[in-house]
Amino acid sequence: MPTVFITGANRGLGLEFARQYSNEGWRVIATCRDAAAEDLRGLVGAVEIFPLDVTDRAAAQALAAELSGTSIDVLLNNAGVLLDYHARLGEIDHDALATSFAINALAPLHICESFADHVAASDMKVMASISSHLGSIDGIGAGSGYSYPASKAALNALMKNVAGDVAGRGIKVVLFHPGWVRTAMGGPSAAVDPGDSAAGMRRIIAELTAEQSGCFVTYQGDALPW
Image (cartoon, rainbow, N blue to C red):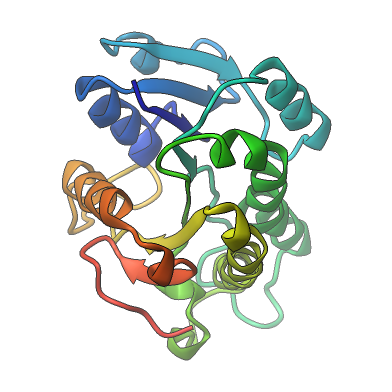
């Protein structure tokens, strides 16, 4: 039975990933800050829920130790925040900026560090992170905000470094723009169904090659500029 590890699995895309993988018979290690996680607990299959604040490095390391000996085929850095969207110069919430970097960029890095051995021990050996087209510096313009684009661009840079470091262990790394998805973050007017987004990313993960490691693509597989 293959295993997927998901951060921020209690809602939105994280919950959809958990649902799809569990429906296909995967073991799902679902992490989230909300220990109750009622929607997660309603899923069928081999779903295990662990409380985790992704910004707590000690907690991540402790969970990695608890799961010692567990092979993780797909590590999914999904947890993220969208703060002070559309902020302009002079309106920047610097606390939101720091929080965005901590959750969107630094947390995925130390999750990869903590669980690299687990991923290396698996058959598929994939580390995937949810980025955004706004993390493409080429696409940033007036009104894009500061916290979200900057933190996702940082995520891209960090994961590109990770891809080089883990290549020798056979681990493949991919960064995704999931589309404008109808979630609590994306809002009800968003164009993309979360099921379609997750399914598209899962297809890419399943077919990812060593030569593609470090790529930045849409959920449909189209390459994005850095």
